[in-house]
Length: 112
Image (cartoon, rainbow, N blue to C red; front, top):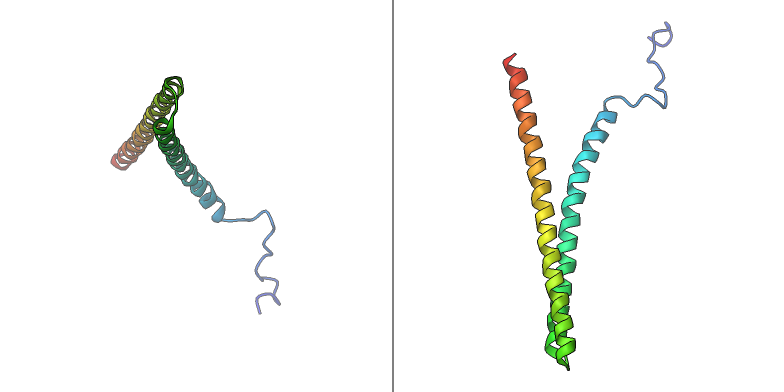
């Protein structure tokens, strides 16, 4: 009846997304954080595989020169693991600081 009286629902255009467009932005931000965390986990996993392999190769080494080279490579892998851990700590600290800052801003707005 409404359509017959010229008061029907308007046609939704392709560029009218509505409230869902804001959800996509928030979702993507969350995904970036998850991707970053997964990236650190993948790096750690690869380093641990390298460490295992190097330890096996050290056991099987046939000369002192070969063993020393493998031990140096092992030390480098351990240093890289420390670097990855430090990067994630800094990332998590920054993320936590931003979360705290946002909650403080919300509390300040609530008080006004």
